[in-house]
Amino acid sequence: MSFDLAVCAEMVFTDLDIVERVRRISDLGFAVEIWSFADKDTDALAATGAKFSSMTGYLHGDLYDPDGAREVVRTAQEAVKAAEVLGVPRLVVHPGELVNGQAARPRQRVTGDMWLAALRGLEALGELGADAGVTFCLENLNTIVDHPGVPLARAKDTLALIEGVGHPNVKMMLDLYHAQIGEGNLVELVRRAGPAIGEIQVADVPGRCEPGTGEIHYPAIAKALRDSGYRGTVGMEAYASGDSVAALEAFRAAFTLP
Image (cartoon, rainbow, N blue to C red):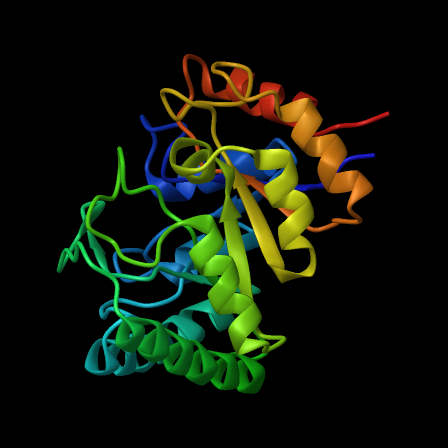
């Protein structure tokens, strides 16, 4: 079997402009993930005919702060409009806003008020998603290498939030690259997350390149996903270690099971 496979256009074919990257990924038989919609010509992307899997679902704000959560929801309304143009079914949010990959407002301590603000913000996103026919996916992050200072970012925290909200339009963007750096035990994490998963993202560790370049045995992850009943999208949010076409084929091979 093969999962529905997607590739992040921000990280491969980097010698091409974003529209051509999308075309190349689509021509190779993959759906496409993008990051922010605000810096892109969504009409030009839509004209490629590509199938889009996910994109960033807000512009500003921190879910862990009441005012910040309201800003996430406000700017998510703009994301919903862009998603309609592209046919994107899943919109990605983070516990805290990222600027060039770093926490916009770093926090080193988590409080009960932060948990409550995040829950209320996700509930509001769920209602927005239900009205628009999209699912908001909260992504887990690692705070050791890539995103220091983002609270509520571990996979176990984002999973707790998703289960606490309990809304069909709020799921988890389970990023296994981030989870491996921060927590490990990926097969059990996949089993535990189960129906809370909206989409899976993968890259190998270290280096954040395609499966097969690091320490994660992704065929075992693929088997665990299959055995747990997951039939959704797996997205390669990874750099190519060399040739982009070869990287995409290695990704496809890792997630194609007999």
